[in-house]
Length: 263
Image 1: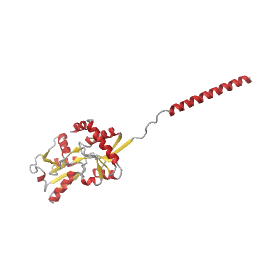
Image 2: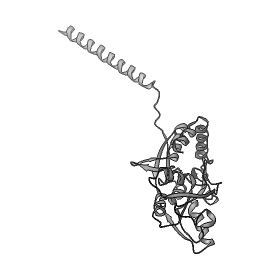
Image 3: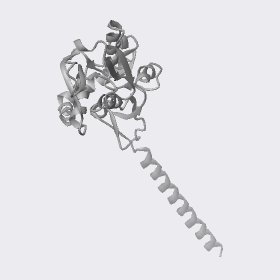
Image 4: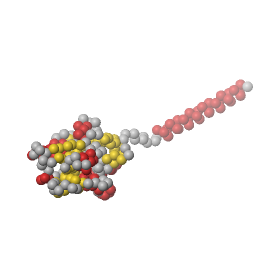
């Protein structure tokens, strides 16, 4: 009986030792596995999705030339891009106070904005154009805007141009809309005489609108108008990363693909 007990105890000890060795071996194997990276670079981008074809909302999805562009830049630079829609005038202050990392919204690079934020290299050449009702024969270009009812989008260089016309002639009336589509609708129904807006946006509206009664007149002006991506002043790391990404997508053909998709 005593020998049987000794035998059982010896067998149990062997079993415990074997189990311990297996456990140690498992721990050793796990420790040799490489660590999985958990840090993902996130890029919080602000836009104002009322400026087709650069940014707009379709079935709650933010889409357009700028949206494709910033996502493509984020992909080649290893960013997870998150885009937020906000008021256009809130974009620069939101970049300044760090609420967002960058802003892309058909935003013209102007001396005034350069005092508040830094811009990437220009990614699009724009310029302004005048749009009027098809029946309007009085307005043939910018020289005919004084004393008329003008419309533009809030915060844009088109709105700034309308203000300059009003300063030159107090009889001029200006109506500023948060959505450029509302300005075009006002022109369609005869509420204003002309809309001053970025040429590619106006051209896109005329191309896609159903039964529009609007036409473009005169030449493109403010041709030096260029769009850039805004970042917080002094954030050279992000600025360099975005510029580098812009170069990459131009070199690999992605930029041309995006351009052809929307224009």
